[in-house]
Image (cartoon, rainbow, N blue to C red):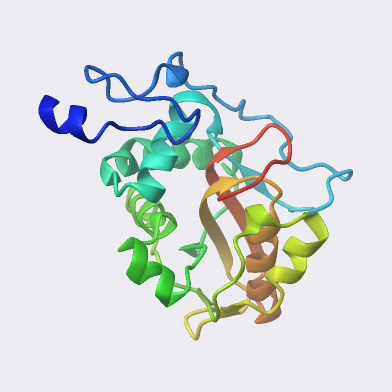
Length: 220
């Protein structure tokens, strides 16, 4: 294993530095996970994208950022269990008075799924649904490939995802849905997904992500 690491050194996807042989992560991930208080306001009236309901257990920093990058780009599905547990706990606290009919997730276009082998948001949603004893269904589909969001400014992001998400036949008018994603930065993706669900009569959509940025930054 050490010989392979010498021949093919690992580079930290966050800071770009080489990861030492005896470490699983770069030193930039050291320190405890930065937890989001249950009463934190994650979307205000001043935000360009206004989400009615959004919560997350962590800020997108340090070890949590490393885990999400590992899950998203390096097939490290071992993090699904711990991340989804924290997300389910946050949902139980923040949305304690809400009765959900279904858990769903932000979809990926089929070519992206074939490239990445799985949808990380779907894995998180399935695990959360089991913990909360709620059915998980694919209520959304992404009908076309889009330009990566992190290459665009705020207004272009909204336009980039316009008419991209469509509700499936599994949607039930009047239902209350928990929408799962991995990371929330500007909230554009979640906004467009909520828009598609509301269009077919879903009553309320509550969002949960594994992590949120403290201020708008490029999402992945």
